[in-house]
Length: 354
Image (cartoon, rainbow, N blue to C red; front, side):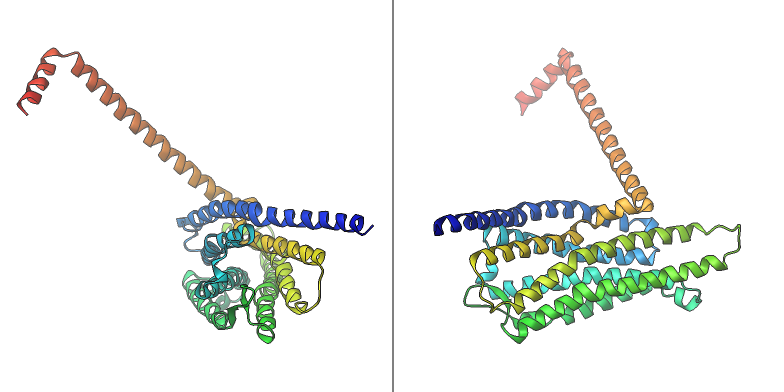
């Protein structure tokens, strides 16, 4: 009787382990491929001449650069450790600390640059001339540099608090340090950025409505304002994506720390492990799929992508024509050589003399 009761439970545990393997191996690999393509195209678009004088795009570009660290350093390490049990952090303390320091700083900076982009849109929609002066590329560069420095210092505790425990797990020291680490991650990555984005977004919408009341009837908004509205839509969708993908992971980390000493059976451990893998995978969606979100939401973004694609295809076409012309020239030269006996004799004499 006990065997009959235990067997379905073992089947459920095996199914949970299978789901965990699917997410940790294949889903993360798909996100790595999508992130590689998306971040490359994001960089090509945000560095075009059309966007160089737009301060908001500077923040998008900075967020893209931070996501490079997530996709090309953090994601591969997660694929190896979660999917194939290959984790140098289990026995290499410097790597353990470097990985988590990069993990926290890169993911957080990516979100905080979007916060700055929301604040930039709020300032650009203000009626005050002094407030609108904030939305300039030179100010954006300074803000990006200052935010990067603050982010690097904010997580400077990671190289101190993180150790390899007796079970060969890389993580924060047990007790207060682990609780502090999860709380900082929850506030600094999952709660504060989306909340500030929401505040600045509502503020920007209010400023835009005031400007519409001021504009006389019959007068249309300038094209620059249309571009600003497109950027606001892109920001709104990205803020929604950040909120959905970041909060569950931070809550899971805090829950795992608070229930660390609670006795759990094998089924509960397997279920929690699946939940950890799933929410961790979902948290990477924000860093890998921004390009596809921006492509769907921004007409201006799609236009620049079309220009890049057309330029690339034209370049390939010219290269193919040039290669074809060279092959034809070479073929005609060979034919002329083979059809001219005197030229063949001269070439033979040269070979003999050499």
